[in-house]
Length: 309
Image (cartoon, rainbow, N blue to C red; front, side):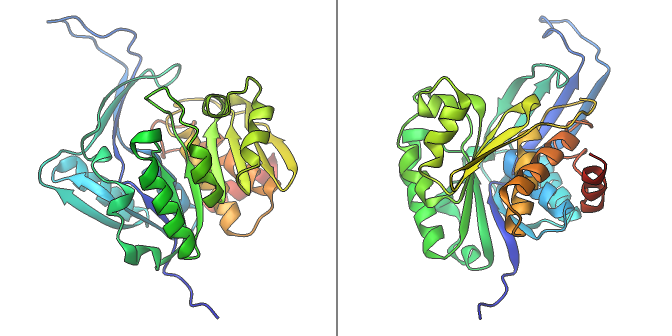
């Protein structure tokens, strides 16, 4: 009988700081000052937000990565640990912690971003011993040709360690939408993307056709549709889960919150429909407060919410 692992999920990437500016309709000109209703400071980044969400649901996540040796880096580690996320995070002596400034989170967000340590830590930097301490690994940040071999090598290593793997592909800034992704995802158990990413990678114009293409290569394929909820395919079954009606305050991190809810269901042995339900509910919850994780539910809150809807 296999010994119980110390942690449920290893998430790669320590995250960054999100500074959220509300009610800013224009960037000030030189010498000009604009006053806004609110500016808030939050932990951000897909893996950090997903890890925080999992911890709130009672799971045992571990995050590995790199932050700057500065206030922002220490804030990230303190926040993760405060909510019960284990950390294996190093301090960089040469780069500062990544910061993203988001304008108008209530509508179509725009960003000013300094990557800093966010791009300095790669899958090649993950300590081998961490793979022996978890039962699942969640990765993000695939950038096509520039890090394809790194991702392919890592997912193969994770499967050799008998781990299940989830991957949220993310936006391809190169614009190539490298079809080498279909070499990686056969080693992935749950593949997440949003609608535009799915259409670009599959070269399809219909999201259901795109899902069918992806599902050929991976046991579970999930496409997040924002206000329309999500669709997923597994074993020849395709399901759609509409989103829940909530008051939208800030859409930052909704997709990462969805991932946390979905993986909570997946790693606790729930079926496709239930996993979609968990993910969509958590994504809906997350937009009801400022910051990518402030609105994320605890397990009792999630259970009560689903019982009413």
